[in-house]
Image (cartoon, rainbow, N blue to C red; front, side, top):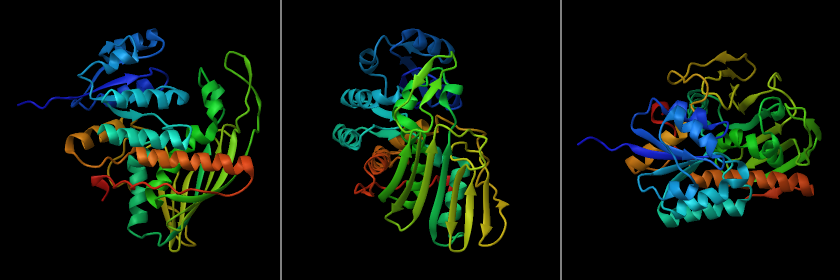
Length: 357
């Protein structure tokens, strides 16, 4: 008997939705049934390009019994409501980041998924990339010795210089929008965080969109945090919506007793991985397998679908995403109130990819 495809539908047809659909195309066992959006013209354009049907509303999408999993690509502030509705409708969910803007909301979604017997995963999934898995393998195998320090840099530029709707990004700030990328990698490698000490500031409050419309921001566009992990490692995270990608400070550096590893790109799967023994000079490290060029945005969806079908733990989980939200909120509290903030939540760290063991 021919195996039935795993069937998904998309809610939110904005800027990133096309990248998901394009990178899903090679996976014939996953079928895109359709999409919806608050602006149905966007959903119509989306399905005309990538296939499937237009659902007139989220409710109509959730009423479709053929949909196994909903891919939530809505804006940040809509995530909690959309995910909750999907879980209550009996659908598995893969969501864009962050899972929520508040730790309590995030953990309530995790609990709801468990109660419903459904899977919940959340971007970012870049720890699944070839470059990221290569760096992690070096660390696991002890090439660096005990890793005590990491530097993570997120110089993400000025959103208004390229995005048609920068407002929602500035409302949540660089920390919640892109700080999640290195934090997910760091927590995958080091496990749960236990305390943060942070500083944040609005560097550039008055900005102008591509259409020359002035706008003002009040959420800090710069944050730096020292994060202490239960494993004993410490990381410094820097995030901003001010310094461009031209900055030589980028990626993640891991420093251990015996040596250091530099992952120059925490997003793209084809970033460079370099290693040096202490006091030496960096040399390029070959990938554990041939890398995808760029970011395979659908890899998290594919991994979750396979985890469901194989009845095994997923590598990208709602619990880890909720812990990352706890870290983000702790950083925000720390720079807002001027003191260190403890973190108590736990999650089960992911397993490496089979091809990177």
